[in-house]
Every structure is written in C-alpha cells, then in structure tokens.
Image 1 (cartoon, rainbow, N blue to C red):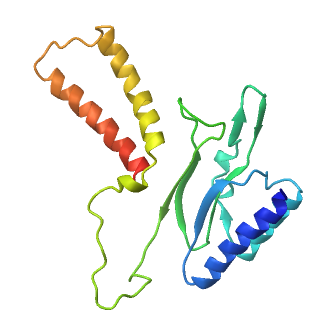
Image 2: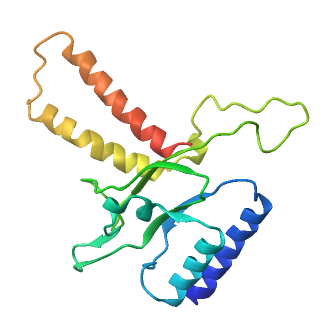
Image 3: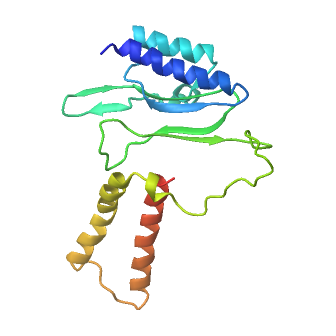
Length: 194
C-alpha cells in the first residue's frame, strides 16, 4: 500500500468538503502516523494541506503540550504523530495530551476545548423545525469501549466491596455508593454515545 497516495486521497476528500463549505470553520484530529516536524514526503503533504487551509496546530498554540503522543514502553519508542488542526476562526481555549492511568492504546488521547458560535443553522429547511435529540444514540455508541471502560472504572469499587473495605456504617452509605456508580456510568456514557 502506498501511504502517500492514501494520505493524498484522504486530504483531497477533506479539501473537497472544505471547499464545499468554505464559509465554515474546521477542526480535525487524529493519528497522522508521521511527525510533522521532520522532512518526509507524507509530512510535506500534510504540512502543505495545513498551510493551504491556514490551519493551526493545537500543539503549537499550547507549547507546554509539546510532548509525544505515541508511547510504546515495550519497544522503548515515542514520537508525536497525533494532531488536532483547526481553522484560524476557531477559538481553541485549551489543548492537552492526556496520560491516563488506564489506556488501551499506545497513543495518548488528545483533548481540546473549542468554542463555536453560530447565528443561524447552516442548512436551511422548508420551515421545518430542526430535530432535537433528547436521548443518547446507543445504535451509534462505541459499545466495546463502554463495556471495557465500565469494567475498569468499577473494578476498584468492586475490589473494595469484596475486601469488606467499604463498611456501611451509616444509612446514607448505600445511596452515596449508588450515586457514585451512576455518576461514573453517565460520564462514560456521554463519552461513547453521541
């Protein structure tokens, strides 16, 4: 497989969407599998795309986050190959590379806070109200991540219960435990279900 050709095709598709919605800002993130700070054919293709669209690298906006995003302790390797790129009109309030205690990948998660303002919906409908989503979309949720992360989040609590380290000394201990579990599940659910 020609990685450069694949990269060029993906960027051409993104470029087509950027041209189609030229009045919109764009933020895109992910694993580029290339360090954009080193001379390389693929790095040049991505850097040219970034320059052509005047995109800003969040790691350059927040220089304190200048650190590796790929870390493989077993192979003793690390590099920065994951990026968040944003249009100049995007208000990026924060960016960080998270080093979680539990991570199922050798890539560290990227986190950004972006503020987006809009005065009207971009797509006009024929006097139809915009649909409102009142519930989470389980049919589009990452159920595998939800399953494994739920186990990881609740395992310490289960260990405490199994070891009798959590003694129910007061009547409110059970509701507090219940609320703690519900809070963890809601936090995780919001992350995996759109």
